[in-house]
Length: 500
Image (spheres, rainbow, N blue to C red):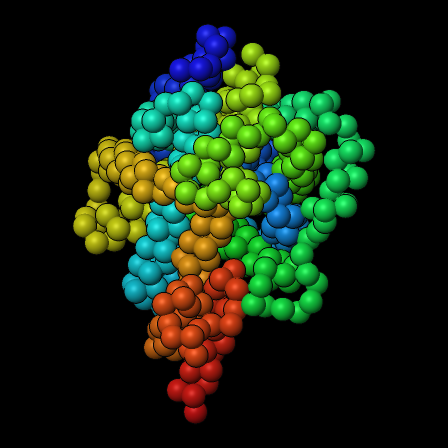
């Protein structure tokens, strides 16, 4: 252990506070409605911070600075797409779900197309949550390992058990109020890191180097869909965020925690207001770190030697992208004063815990509503429903821990998460939009559209597995875009042919 006692004490106090919140809310967590929707009593401002905390995960905390350090600001275009998705969601999706009264985001799919649509969307959601939790677990383990030397598997297991504990105890209300605290901590942590780097490097120097080395570039504006151009990332971001706000149980469930539809819509715009500038701040951190170590190359030699040994690449051949995700943890370890490091560690832990606690709770809700009550036992007394929710939360948490351990060693957190989310989100959003936009499309046409969409998603996602002549010409981020569009268009076309 290399952390001073003061820093370790701050981290322990933070973890105990999170557990204490879970214990506090466990007193009134005595029904499935309270566990899943907090009985609809959450104010809009708190819900907005909760959404913001979910968006601002460890993937943002580590992946965004890692990307801008290793390349440029191209992924920031994802954040710029959020207001467009928020407008669509507040105008159409929030009223739709609030009026339906269904806690599960997928119940209406069965009413629209049959049990297969509900099951498919539910499976996609659970796989997305496992991919998200696994990526975040790995991110937090990567950082704490760099700071303390503790085995990454042990870090994932201990932090995961802590999250499971307070999520099971406190339900959705504990999830939201812990996320409010975590949102504040994460924002303070980002501002603190920027302040320390700027103090050592100078703001004008960061701007000068960033412009000179093209670090602020958003990417190519050419209409090229085979690489990560501005248009590819913008489309990817828009469709992914439509998935978040429109069909992701993680978000839909929290619409029902608000007092009314107006408060739910307000919370989405508050999330946008908070997240976009803070996301910009994290990309700036990566550029500032690039400048700092460019000016002080000896200070990063230790990290480069470590990565060189792990990847069997000569130090001179290493590129910034080879160790981008590890630069911020290394900077925290070597440049942050005692006491402040503990606060930053707490901020980083909060970045991981906020997203995973809501993911565990929403996944448990899906298990109860879409699996247990649908296929196992329809009439379940309230006490047993709560027990099923508790067990499902624990199982999802343990699966998330397993996924996190399996991800140890990936090159880029952001790349892995973007690919996995694109694969699972495309079909889920496509079926939802087909039913939402095309009232006349029936079951058979929807099935054909879904099958065609899955084929296209597989073709783009696993293009390297096909012979070169049959490989997809599209960037992998286009998976969710083309998968969604193909399901909607093919479903409508098939329905027209059937009608004729």
